[in-house]
Structure formats: C-alpha cells, structure tokens
Amino acid sequence: MAKSEKKNKAAKPGKGLKSSYPYYLAGRAVAANGDLEVLDKYSGKRATRVAMADAAAVRKAIVAAHKAREAMAEFAPDRRRDVLEHCVRRFGERFEELALALCIEAGKPIKDARGEVTRLIDTFRIAANEATRDPGTLLELQISPRTRGYRGMVKRVPIGPCSFITPFNFPLNLVAHKVAPAIAAGCPFVLKPAIKTPVGALIMAEILAETDLPEGAFSVLCCSNEDASLLVEDERIKLLSFTGGLIGWDLKARAGKKKVTLELGGNAACIVDADPGVSLDHVVERLVFGAYYQSGQSCISVQRIHAHADIYDKLRKKLKAAVGALRMGDPRSDTTFIGPVVDEQAAQRIQAWIDAALKGGAKRIAGGARQGTMIPATLLENVADDAELYRKEAFGPVALIEPFDDFDAVLERVNDSDFGLQAGVFTGRLDHAMRAWDRLDVGGVIVGDVPSFRVDNMPYGGVKDSGQGREGVRYAIEDMSEQRLL
Image (cartoon, rainbow, N blue to C red):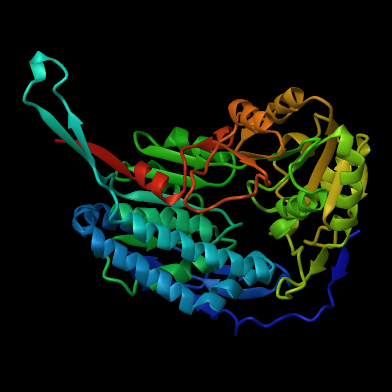
C-alpha cells in the first residue's frame, strides 16, 4: 500500500504562476481574454488563466506562417543556431519557474519537473548543434556511358509551414521535440499545446519572442479541438506532427496531401530474463522508475512485466516492497514520487480498469484505494489477456507482472499487442538481446534497461497503433525537410 503524503511539508521552488498568460500569434503576445482556466492538478483549484484563440486567430496564424516560409528558409543556419542557443540560455535562467509551472499544471513531482526542464534544455542544445550540420550529398552519376560527365548534389530544404499538436503529459519536452527541430530546419510553425497544460509552452513562446526570428515564424495558440481543425486540414500546412491518442489516425485521414507524423502511445512491455545481466535490486529500481515515474503518465511507461519463472518469486517479492514504499502526495514536495493523474475522469477510468481486472481473477500485489485524482502505485498479477488493463494503454501508476519459461515464446507474447513503441529487455545473454532486436515489433528495443529510457537525440517513435515517423532532433529535421537535387 502506498504511503499517503497529504500532510508532508511541501517545498517552495518558485513564487508561483502569473495570474494570466497571453497566446502568441505570429510571434506577438495577444491577451485577448482569460477564458481558459488552468487548474493546479493537486489541489484542483484554479492556478491561472490563459487566453483562448478562436478559429479566426488560428487562420491568421496559418496565413502568417505561409507568408514567413521564404524568410525562414533564407534565415541563415547560424542565425537559427543563435536563436536556439538563446533559448537554451533563457531556459536555464528561468529553470525553477518552468519546473514550478510543470509541477502545478501537470501535477508532476518537482524532482521529475526539474528533470523535464533539463531535457528541454538538452533538446534545444542538440537542435542548435544540428542547425548548421547538414553536409549535403555528392552523387557520382557516371554509372554508364550515357551519363559520363555528370555529377549531382543533394541538399535538404525546409518543407514549409508545420502544425504541431501536443498532449498534457510532457508539456515542455514534447513541445521541444517539435519546435526545436522546426527552427533548426527553417520551418515556420503553429503550435497547439494541450489546454490542460499550456503554461510551459507559453513561457517558451515568450522566450522565442525575444529573438529575431522572421515575422510570422511561430504562433502558440490554445484553442478548442474544433478550431484546431484548420491545423489538420489547411493545405498551406505542409507537415502535421501530432502526439496524443489514437484520434491521430483520424487526423491523418483528414490531413490531405501534407506529411503526417504520429506518436500515439503504447502499453510497453519489459522482459526480465533468468539471467538479467545485472542484480535484481537494480532491475527493481529501474522497473519502479519505468512503471510509476510521473504517475505512469508516459507513452513508454512500463505496463507489462514478463519475468522468467526462475527469478519470478524473488522479483515479485522485491517489487512488492519497493512499490509499497513509494510516497504519494503533494508534487511540490521533494519526497513525493506519486502525484495526481491529470484529472478526475482519468483517475476514474484507471480505477475502473483495475477493478475489472481484479474481478476477472487478477491478484493485487501492491496498491490501494483511489483518493480523488490520487491513485496509489499498483502492481497486479494474473491479469486476463482480454482485460483492458492488458490490451490498452493504462496511462496511470499501474503495472502487471507474469512469469514465462521460454524466451522465444515471451517475444511473441510482447508482440501480442496493438501497440509497438518501445520494449525493454534485461538479459545477460547476447543471443537473447540480438533475438529481441530482430523479432520485437516495436520502434525501439532497450537492452539492460526499461522501455521508458529515452535520450533526446535518438530516433523515437513506434509501429502499429503507436504511430508513424520518428522524433529525436536529427530525425525530426529529416521529416521537416525535403531533398533537392542539383
């Protein structure tokens, strides 16, 4: 049972949020209204207000981005680098403000929030390095008598205006993985952040507004899904990048001729082999991080744990103790590990899935009763294959564990999913590691760690229902550019 920390002393990492935030249209702040209430996810009280854009504002932003396409393409790579380096410097200066915004608007424990700000800075620094890196390609075209005397060169050019739609769970880093590559590639963009967690993106926009980006190069607009339809359907947008739920496939169907990249979640599995290659204590530490970090609200959160029968009982016992010791409470406290999920509706759904699994024969190893938006870290075994908690994305602090005997069979078990984002494999056998890499139908196989591991310069994305395309700065730049032959 998780230890409730409702009364533990909260740290005070910053002064708090401003009373209101504008949206940014064509690089300029617009305090049109204060229509959007942003809640403190722990207290449930209003934390601030944010200006909401309407369809007319979205249309103006698209027009501005379309007009800015040539200016951004001609904005020299060293100037793009300078913009990104300015952001790196200013994010560092406003580090605690950004962390507090995350803590309040996302309910993210403050230690995790600081970690995300660090990744925000990393992502912009990587993009700054990439902005001047593209070497182009020299082609030898003399492949037959017909083409003697010919040579070719290929360079990458910006694809044009991009639209970005981001979810609530990583309000800084998932925005960074779209915005920073766009600037490095020379693409104007319009961003719609999640309306549950918009403040971090608006602080980033405030910092971008300090730079000399061309007029109209960026807009950051909080708006309704209905008004955001222009970001999907308008033909002037050349690329749509969406991170969120399975609704992404519907957006792709409506997007017309534009390029579409999607990251749509998963129910990530982690295999612990008979010889995991490291101590079980280390495995437990990483599994607990992977499953319960930021209350499991991550697309690559550990949801399914497959442990070899030879070590299953020992691992189960150690996990039970570790999960039960996780502290739940105010995300402002440095001792809190489990904070609230994003809202009451999400908490009710997660609890309903847990209850249905228990009714279907599952056994609770660790966990307890829901308290509003607070769900204790939960570990179950014997969960039925057809349970929603097994088949779908839980997106909460809950994981399942089951034993296996045969490594090849467990690879098929991991693949028995509609999703395929990342998978983790703890094994001391090189042949098992290579076999997992060959056979697992996922975007990434992480050997020696949990699927929740991500470095911001690596290719990141999935297959099957998990989406299409890859992020990771260099790979996103490739999507945001076209090859042009000379």
